[in-house]
Length: 225
Ligand SMILES: CC(C)(COP(=O)(O)OP(=O)(O)OC[C@H]1O[C@@H](n2cnc3c(N)ncnc32)[C@H](O)[C@@H]1OP(=O)(O)O)[C@@H](O)C(=O)NCCC(=O)NCCS
Image 1 (tube, rainbow, N blue to C red):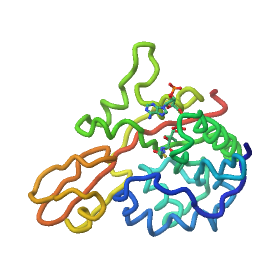
Image 2 (cartoon, rainbow, N blue to C red):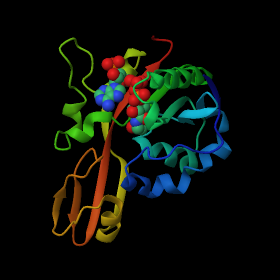
Image 3 (tube, rainbow, N blue to C red):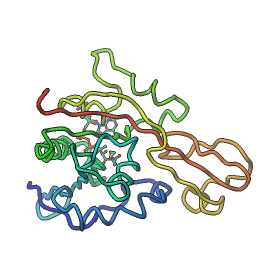
């Protein structure tokens, strides 16, 4: 297995369909490959890309995930840390411990910025608890003290520390027809809808659906580790 540069995203079926419709992310995502190629990488196993990692140098800690892109492409400023954007394991290769290799590599890349890596984490199992506030979920621990969420646990095991939570890491807005085509849900009245893969309910009002995805901030400081 080896890590190689990644020129464009190739893995499919990673995210729920609706999540591909955040306006900021669709506007800027492709530019990370052309303008920050050294921070986009893939894990290759037997000639096949089995995982992808995306990160970007930022100036100050962004407010949340989509704000990292706004900071880089709209506000600018001298980068002083690396911000994780995504780690994606091909569905058929999950459960092999590959996420750890990807995160280790990202931590290594952050050495260029004094070893500061910040990660607006999308907790894997939050979608099973859409009504639990993110602050509460971020504090869930197992009896042995390790985090209840496997992806947060992986971050912590490598030296990351949870430092807070944020709302609107992703913002997806659309007509009810958009939402029907993304999810297969009927959306036939105003109110809150639990949708597969969504970390919080989708709010429907006056013919529009709005999804505000929260995240958990994890900070890795190599100097501290
Ligand atoms: C989140 C993700 C990167 C984790 O990678 P993975 O290869 O599945 O996980 P690993 O094999 O490295 O295991 C990491 C931990 O998750 C646990 N885990 C893996 N699959 C699990 C599942 N389906 N349910 C519960 N725990 C699971 C592992 O047991 C391990 O925990 P532990 O060793 O502390 O007990 C991967 O599932 C993924 O790509 N998901 C879709 C994209 C995404 O959400 N990325 C993260 C946000 S950027």
